[in-house]
Amino acid sequence: MSDPKLNLTDRNLLGLAYAREGQYRVRDTETPGFFVLIGSRTKSFMIQSDLRVEKRRVTIRMKVAEVGEISAREARSRAKGLLARIAAGEDPRPPRVEPVPVLQDAGVPTLREAWTRFKASHLERKGRAYGTFRNYTDHMERLFADWLDQPLSVIGEMPRLLADRHDHITRHHGPAIANGAVRSFRAVYNHARKTCRQLPAENPAIGVDWNPDRRKNTAMGAADLPSWFEQAALIPNPIRREFQLLTLLSGSRPEALKNVRVEDLDLRRRVMHIRLPKGGPDKAFDVPLSRAMLESVFRLRRLGPVIYPQSGREWLFPSDAACGHMTEHKEKREALSHYGNDLRQTYRTLGQAAEVSEVDMHLLMNHSLPGVNAGYITRSKLMRDHLRAQQEKLSQFIVGSAVGRGRRPSAELSRWLNSTSRMMLQELLDEHPDTARLRAGPRSALRRLEVQAARMAAHELPGALLDAPSRRSRRYA
Image (tube, rainbow, N blue to C red; front, side, top):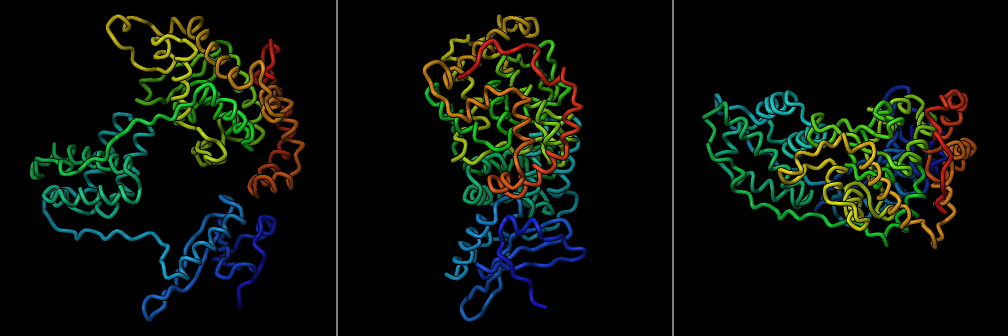
């Protein structure tokens, strides 16, 4: 039986049912070789074409993207590009890394065994931060996956293997991740060396020519803020929009901010507890909340439980990810010029422009204080009055630089910063799902249906936790 054909659009993809068993595919009527593969739980954009190599043909079948990650139009555009490369005689699939032959060496652990022991005794037992654990896991189980069953002595006796792998990662993944991956390998090797004297004493990382590490200078100045705020106001997902704003106003590391729970907010004291900063739980600290930050928190508390009914009651930045909170903070550069650590650098740069003292910036950003004299300062005793006043000063400088007196913000930006959480919630509930789908794709349409189905739940939310305790003393216009 031939495969069905359909014009693959976002609207038509919503109507395709998942397979009861096995998989089936629906071919595109517009682009030959482009189709969607549908299983019991997933829908994937795929391509298939024949590559002519010398006098023989090789059938290439590869995935373009998951349905919902990108629109059907963008998937078709990518598919046309891949099919054109195949037609030109090029294989678009990523090159395979040839595994190093496995040699036997009794009594010496393999890289997998050394990594497993390092993970249990050095990372888990010592309670290392989630980001540290994730980076090590990515390096060892992805970039060194074909070495996991290799005895460590083979790599230790042939440092050229590690130097060549560093060069390979640099070419295909970038210089920064190449350095990080080899540092992870170096740490695992040194840890294994402590309990296995049969390993060469000299770490094979000594043969690596390291890529130069350069500190990124990606901060914005006061003159850059108006355009950034205009870009942020157009982010369709209000949770992601508020995340970018709070990252800028708090100077927090993105990974730490994603893990903030609702219970970490103390609105009476006007602080937000960061329980998982860089360095782990022992470095946990409180962030004083300015008025602009509080207004952002109120919008999140009103909208979060409605857009994400389950996770929105637990996390400040909920999502439909398995963990319940945001996992990816990056936006497209053409949509938002600065995000993540760019905003942390901006916070520090604008703190200097706003004339916040060096010591206060260290305290606000939870940095170690330099010098013996500064070590006598107790941060918690400055939180209630002094640090909150400095945070307020910096927030007013940031927001005022973008939408202060003499500036004419767009209607979207003015509505974002001036609307109460109830007004924004009503706009969200009133938007028709078809409008959302045309603007942001099929996943947004499905989310909008869930939002409207949760209307009654929204009316049951405790207003005392969602609304500001007092009216705004001034408006940003």
